[in-house]
Amino acid sequence: MRGKLEERKTVEPPPIPAICDTFIPLPAGLELYKNVEIKEELPIPQIMRNRSVPVFSIYQIRFREGVEDVTDAIAELEDFFFRPGRISRVGNLRVDLEVRCEKCKYHSILKGVSQLSRCPRCGNTRVMTKRIRTYYTLYGDWEDFITVNKYSWYLGLPREQRHTGYIARGVERRASPFHLAVHSDRAFITSFLSLDWPTYIEWYTRPRQLGAIINVTIDRHGRVDNTFIQSIIKVHCEILGYIEAYLARLRYQFQVIYP
Ligand SMILES: [Zn+2]
Image: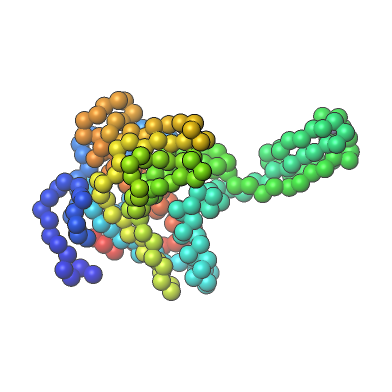
C-alpha cells in the first residue's frame, strides 16, 4: 500500500491528483469544535498529528465480538452516512404514546409516556392508544451533531429530495470524501481532504423555503479571508471525530493504518 505513492512537498490542501501521505497544518487560529453546536464530547480525530491533518487517511475497523454476520456490520457502518439510521444508533430509545379520544376528539403524541388509562382532556376511559418507539439524541429527536451543524453537504452532493435539502447551484455531483469498504472480518474508512467544494450552498427546509445559506467562504463572524480552507479542514476533522465517536459507541475497535 505504501509502494509508489507520489511525494509532494506542498503544504497547501489539494486537489492533489494522487493518494499521498502529505499532512496539511491546521491554519493558525483554527480550533476544532469551536463555534459549533456541541452537546457531547467529541474527540480530536486520531488521524491528526501535531495540529496537522493528512490529505488521505485510512481507518481499519474491527467488528466487535458478537457481530457474526457481516451484513449487520455493513448496516451499522453504512448507517453513519444515513440520518435516520445514525440517529437510531447514536440516540436513545424512547416510547411515546399516540392518544386518540373519539369522545372529545383529543389527539396527541405524549412523549415518554408508555401507557394511559383515561383521556387527559375528558377522562374518557375508552381512549385509544398506540405505542411508538422513537430515538432521540442530545440535539433533538431528528437531529445529531451533523444535522444540527448543517454539515450533511460534506457527505456528498447532491443531497436533495423533492427540492428540499442541500442545493449547490451549478454543481452536479460532488463525491463524499469518506469511503467505506467492508471485508469479511473488518472494514476500512478512507478519507480524502480536498478543496474542490462549492463555496455557496443553499439549504431548503421545504420546496422554495430557504432555511439557511451555507457560505463556506464566510465564517460565522462574517470574515472572508482564508476561511474557505479553514472551513473545509474544520468540517473534515470534526466529522472524522464524530465518526470515531460513532465507532466507539458501536464498540468497534479502530486504528489509523495510513499514513
Ligand atoms: Zn377525551
